[in-house]
Image 1 (cartoon, protein in one colour):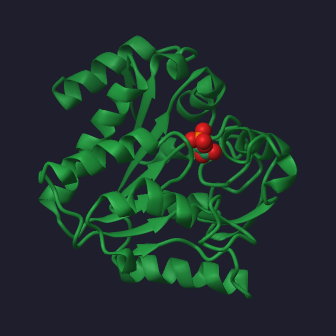
Image 2 (cartoon, helix red, strand yellow):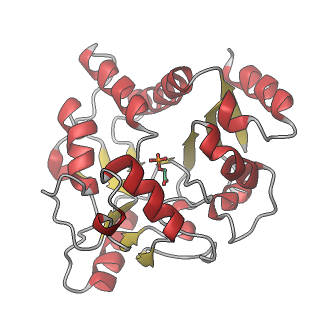
Length: 259
Ligand code: PGA
């Protein structure tokens, strides 16, 4: 696992966006796995800037998102489909028909999840998977206690995730946050060829420590990335504060990225 520690989240977002821009330039048919949440917003803005500046095109790119709340239609302003349209898809030249988000209103959610996995497989698998990390160490909605081999399925949010998401997105109203979701599994996520995880702010210190230096454990599902051979963690200094080897990681990743 490579850990890139930047002074600010702006700098980290720029570097992560550069990695995606270069990959899409090299392979215009890149298959992306995308994430929602407050963390990737700056990176998405950087990706959109590169499109505006005509450095890259997403015309042939396909994407699959990590998760969606059960019960919210894609038109709901708190749905992840809505979030993606607003924060990225409408700002780049991707074809909306090439973007995929799980259907939170599916009549048969497990069937929806199986079909989603089949679509990803048919597209040749995910080349680059973007991830945030929950303050409890979750990736997608894979909460503590979820198997590291899990597949896309219906999942249940912990009270701490409901609290975090209420604070950031539902104007503090915990009752408004759906308590279940459809989510790619940890096993599904780890099949991506490259993984980019973003983590910013003090609130993520423990999660980042668990992910990078903790034992590999279903108690911190992000720790599954330790067994991935091309996983990159981009964080700011606040999120990296509890890492024992942070100076070494910063030096090594700077050398690898030619910074
Ligand atoms: P955040 O969420 O980016 O809003 O902090 C991350 C996550 O829960 O995966």
